[in-house]
Length: 258
Length: 219
Image 1 (spheres, rainbow over the protein chains, first blue to last red):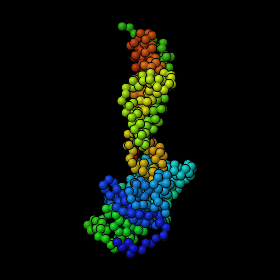
Image 2 (cartoon, helix red, strand yellow):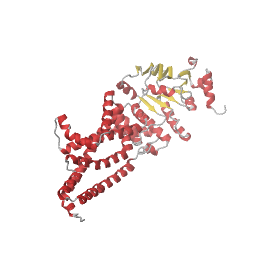
Image 3 (cartoon, helix red, strand yellow):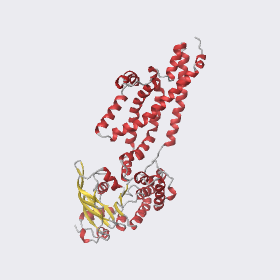
Image 4 (cartoon, rainbow over the protein chains, first blue to last red):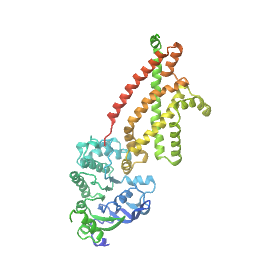
């Protein structure tokens, strides 16, 4: 592995998330077989690799939606909470965006975004509404505040979901295949919002099949296969000079007819 | 055979009072059995092991006992066991609530299970407690989804309140039977009772259909 060969542009020394030999099993199946990875503050780290290789599982372990069976995860220098209270305190500072949006269908776009500040941060309704308006404007959906999710396109729903996570003013954003469930024509609007966040310096961990996003926006790319990271490096290294056959193999299958 | 429908008119005040009591029983039972049903369903789904077992046992017990037996049991056994003597109305209310809570619990459990796991996860990912996630996100959706079932339970309950007439709760059925016994006008009183139940039950069923259409949540 020649990870050391690439220059880690935003290596700041401040590590937002550290994965230390993380192991996750589902019965006899090992989803994560000892994953080690650092996410520096302000970095966009993209997790790529074939389906079932453990990328999403790692992301879901990051905020404790899945419990790890071995190793450790550190968030901002502290071990990921084992008890619910400590875990909740960390979740407030980690926004998560899901493949299927998971907007709350019984709430309007505004209520969806205001729900976290209101219920979790107890900001009061006025402040929650102010945040909702600001975040919906940020994702370009100020005019959809009163719409229910069912009246929005997939791309719009995912942008509301991003606004919902941002309203908590998180330190880190986790994206779990945010464009995989979208129609091709709405993928761009979601990636644009994510690009803006990245440019603003948001620390992001992105599980994605959008190689152009990983290439253009990612600061660091980790290639997963069978529950391990087979290679990590800068986008140039991974996409121009992949060091392992597995990475070359994976990337070559992404282009039809290649 | 001659009919004397005037007896119905003569007993109008009693019948009106009985009808009011029937409504009161239905409303009070549901007011108790909806929140209690949610609690029992939550215990079955998310409670610690002993609570889960207790909730399951409760549901299976009351779902599989005839309601009239529960009514009698509440009337004769409950005061002996608890040492508390309740009025006939309160006893009837307790029996109906025990029964309907069990049904509602099953309804809510099915409703909560029908909300996909991602909704709970999205709420937890925001930092909500499990209770907050259930109260703010899962249960409101489940409630909307089970409204049609709750509605039919309501209409059944409205009719089933007649069973508490066996312990002399002065609801519509009891009052009608009393009038029948005093006047020997069986056909008239039973017909009047049927007409009143139907005329009141039918619009309720329709109202419930309307509520269902009004609050449907599309994904």
